[in-house]
Amino acid sequence: MMVELDVASAMDHVSTTIAFADQSGKLAGTFFQASLLPYIVFLYFLNYEGNNTPKTAYFGFQFLLLFVLSTVFTGIVTKSVYSSTLADVDWLHGGAETLLTTTNLYVASGFRDAMAGEAEPEGGAFRYPAFAVFALVVLFTAIGPSVLGLEQHSAFFFGLGNLEANPLDAFAIASEPVNALSIPTWAIHFSSVFEWLFAMGMVNQYAQATGNDKWKALTYGMLPLHASGVAACTYHFFYNAADVGFLVTLQAGLTLLGNTTVAIAAILIAISSGWTVRGAIDDAKAAIVAANPLQSDEAKAAAEAERAAVVEARRPAAPLVPQDVPSKPLVAAELLLLTLATSYLVKYGETVLPFAFEPNAALGGLICVGIPAAVFARFYGLPKPTAV
Figure 1 (cartoon, rainbow, N blue to C red):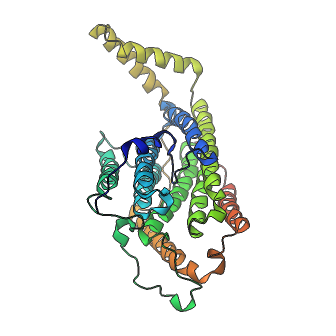
Figure 2 (spheres, rainbow, N blue to C red):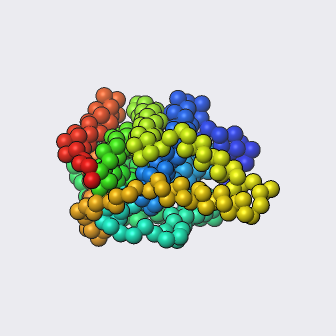
Figure 3 (cartoon, rainbow, N blue to C red):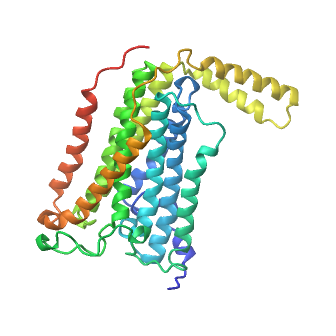
């Protein structure tokens, strides 16, 4: 099937197409766009040298910006080719969500590896797998409709793992609608949620490793973003029904709130690690000097040496205290099994639940409040970090 893109029409949506659904002109779109500024603030403060933020984890947080970018071009294809929303185009939806999963993997593994005493990666080679995933998403987005002939409801990853028949069909209330998520897309969603929870746990434990309890503030700051993921999954549980469309706005609002709370947490961490306004001004001056093409090589070298000395002085004197963390194979196995079990249970199990086909705003809201509340209670009950 050959599909011609209406480029002029598609470009009308570029500035307002952000996140899982094309929310141009809606409150959700405004929330998603507004959430970018606090996230940039978060990245700036988290990168302060004195924080000792794990290199791999920080890259994971940075990579989220490519996920946001992906929702722009996948949104363009969604609107121009299918006249739909991203949530209802399974193969594009799953592809974009893969980048969020990649983000969470880097964040979680970065903190885990640091506490295990593993050396920070040298160079930038550790970033290549993430960039490869991004390149594949871009490639398939570009060739999916015209070359591969993918239609609106074509399954992500060609439906790998989908069962030919619902094993609970004898008890099913009704058949799945055509926009039901495939197993690969459900798996990507749940893996993102579980990885983020694991990352929250690692950040909380990182407070113990560093003796800086401000890191625990980041754990709590990440909670609204977890709730945002729960809202997205709840919306899909009800087959993206219009009756629970408020969940898209809720997801966007929680994203804005979460990006703000992680920014506040990063500011607290940076200040506790020695960040000052004066130091930030000096950094800016040094950057200007280094970037000035009219400066002599000697002046640039002196500025770089002075900057390197300042950076070195900011590094924490005390090393991290190694923590007991689960092994990578164990974590990978647990996440894989949990993801697959939940994906199959939800996809096929919800067909026997009457309320899945009768969207209820109150129930949807209760799910979005109840699960994050349980997560909060879990972290709140953990012991407070002690000074190193």
